[in-house]
Length: 141
Image 1 (cartoon, rainbow, N blue to C red):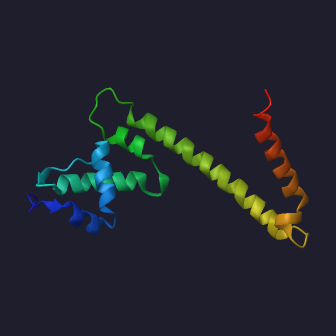
Image 2: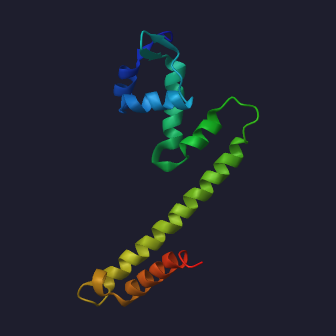
Image 3: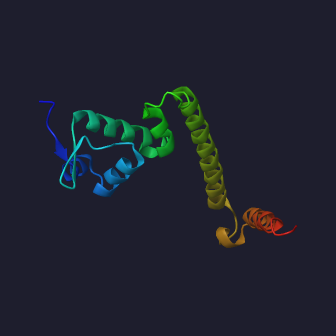
């Protein structure tokens, strides 16, 4: 056990992902096939562990694919893994802030006394007006 090779379709099926994703990872250099038989890519256990790592890092937006590539790269000139992870944590914190803001808006709309809060809420209308003003400001030179 350990020298087995698995076709790209077997790997895709086992990991519950499209073959096109594995090809994409190969094109990016994230997961090169260990060998090809004809036009079919084959992977061994080390590549499957690498795939599991890529999926774990990239799952649920923990780390971008670009950052994942940096983290698993053998390039000695790459940024440190801690730098990349720190950046990913900051990005997640921003997403959390955006989600909390969205949650507050939805909770406000649920308690808004207007009969049709999405169309009639004074606070929402003010926020939308501000968003339009900010968008149009980019047109003014």
